[in-house]
Each structure stands twice: as C-alpha cells, then as structure tokens.
Length: 227
Image (cartoon, rainbow, N blue to C red):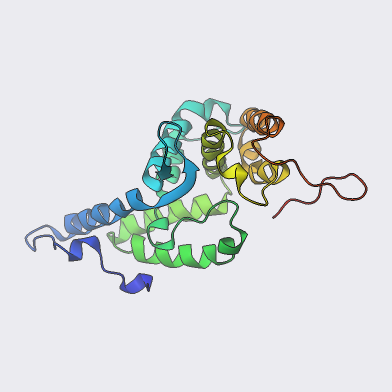
C-alpha cells in the first residue's frame, strides 16, 4: 500500500470539528500510533509463548535506559535517551519491522522508513513534527552519546529475550554465534560493561547449542559473518 495514501485510523471515526486544531492534530497522531501495538517483532516474550510487539519493545527499552544508564561509557541525558527509544520504532507502523537477520529486507529498509517518517511525523503540528523527526534522525545517525546508548539498548533487549527462549531468533537458518556477536557490537560501543555481559550470554548460548558455532575456513579461521 502507498504510505502517503493509507487511510488514518481517525478516518473511520473522525474527531469532532469543534476541537482546537492543534489538539486535534495531536490526538490524531496519538490514535494513529496505536498501530504500533500491532507490529509484531521476531523476538519471543520471556513471560508468554508469543512474539513481542513494537509498543512492548519500546516500553522495555525506556525502562532499560532508566535502569542501565549508570553503565554508559559517556555521560547521557536519561530523559532525552528515553525519548529516542520511544520514538525510534514508530516508523515501523508503515514500514514494518525488519528482523535483525533479514539481509534482503535490510536493502529497502532505509527507503521504507524514510517514507514512513515523512507521513507519520507530518501528522503533528509543525513544531512537534520537527522535534520528533529530529529525535528519529538522531537515533538513526548514532552520532550522540544518547543515540549510541539507545541503539545499544535496542540490541540488548532482544538478546535477553532470545536467551530466555533458549535461542529464539538465534536459531534462524544461517545465523551463527559470530554473526550474533557482530550485530551486537552496538552494545559494547555504548557500554563496555554491558557489551561484555552480552558476550557472556552469547558465548554461553553457543556452548549450550542455542546458536550454531561459526563455520571455519580452510585455515581454521572463522568465516566472515554477514554484514
């Protein structure tokens, strides 16, 4: 479906014309992002036998930022980092979730998400549209301490869920322990302590057979993991 032409949820039951225009725009956005609750991720929940959705993922990241900020290698503004993790997956309402190990989907991910960001944030009043788009752009660029820590949490949360599931998406065909380590490098880039903790979990998962060990080349070196 063309993102620009997709009907809004409030088109089904339009808000009253008597509402203040700014409030109406804000409420229209609030209703539209209810779609986030329907976007399923690949990660299994620890507490139930189903996959998590994007809204649950975003809440979990926000709590992790609050709890784990003390381990950031650079000083971070916790409130700003919480904003980043709450906003970063909103575009998946229209772009869909691209699983971490989906190399094919990754080829079109940026274009899909840019189009979704244009449509979604454009629903807000101009000042808030610019603010939320700037937060999303900051997360994607990973050029600030806050965005680096936010990205680290985005990679740590599904790792924990996969651990609790005895492998989870680590069991995806073609995925090896070295591939998991490569894709979790963002954790260590934000926090050496949390990066080391992530490696402990991956190493133990490999030892237990929850993720396949890397294939070896003829000279005994690990084969290069996917990008």
